[in-house]
Length: 301
Image 1 (cartoon, helix red, strand yellow):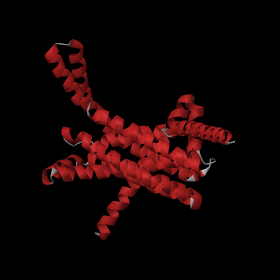
Image 2: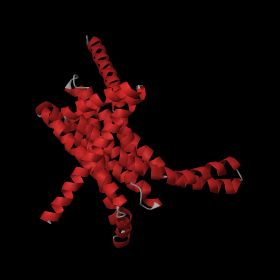
Image 3: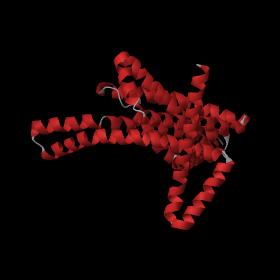
Image 4: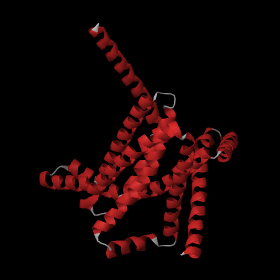
């Protein structure tokens, strides 16, 4: 009897693990787009620190990301049980904040203020304080993107038991955090890898190592500049997408415009229109929030 009970328990555990693996796979596919945005944004956020502090900064942000998810996973489960209507408004606030940050960056670039501000910050404050500001900004952005990942995952496993939901959310949170910050760490150290290969080539005379080292050294700053641009674009795309999903009128407008453009240009329009719609809406929403912020500062400060 005991042996039979043990086999039954093992069978139940195997079935549970299989269900979790299947749901985690589906959730990973649905959150893959947000993962790309998360990667671009966080690689952008850690630029500007000295080379020897890049990995410590990435590790500090990764720890903050784990803390974010340790807060978000239980909170999402509790909200889904007790206050399911609150998920969408919270996400929309986060989406507006991403749009605001993206618009603020563009305005600073257009008026030539961002670079001067960055230089003055480094000159007037010690490096530790500068790093703290970068880390706080990255963790704040990670919190919003992590919230979207958690909510998307929660929607994927909405029909599962509470235990399965908790396990799938935990698996996705761990995989996403390790994946994103592992890649960010690799990206920010590309130039060091290139320098290492060049030094090895000088010692041993390897032509292939020299070519790869030069390529990495040349590609690293261009990749970081691209990620800085992609990070700003991602803010608008993610923020605009959140607003579209949360406001029915915008959702219908997006579907209508996609159908209209698809009828005109075919499959290309079906793929490109939703992205363009989210991006333009993100720019518009971010611009409005920045304008409201400026007006508030003028009148109340």
